[in-house]
Length: 278
Image (cartoon, rainbow, N blue to C red; front, side):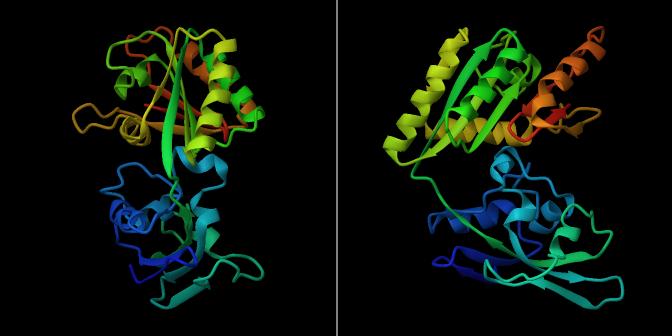
């Protein structure tokens, strides 16, 4: 960490620092970098930006491109290129750092990056509902967003994914819908009540709310997609579509693999249209 200004909610780091190390330091000041890439103890900041992949929290605009305010790049010639700066409002014209995020290092090697930070929520909780079909999960996601709830993350899992991330503690054959929320106690209670009302209208087979400790465990599993060196998938892919098309994509994937003895794990972030398959 080269420079951290807690009062300005900004931080500048070298690209080799791991995401977990950075978050641990920021958390001590009641702040965090609002992206959650997979395997944070192994993922470096430079690698995360080069891949351009965040995590379940991306839907609120907390993507690497939106949070990066400055960058230092080493070009193929060996020269340095600087973009942006160390304060939030510092870019006029095109922000060149956006070219390198998701560029896989093809345009240059990321050496340093500056980010705008987010205050850490005072409390967090997760609402979990279980439905018979994915259509009901997608409907619940749509209705929750219409109710003015601003969750930290909103995710659906098929039966394979639900069991892969040890979501329920036992094997289930249904679909899971999760909403992660944070804030002050009264704000948290209001949001959870809104989510409960939405889900109960769709008649879930299960509905429960878990505390912050269990919330962190569950979302760590979802972020890593149940990754295990011994059971890692042969093939994994990620598709991005319009949020309104997520349900259709999942249905088509299920039809394609209906005759397979090993159906895939499907996980979606319906608020911003991403489906992961493993």
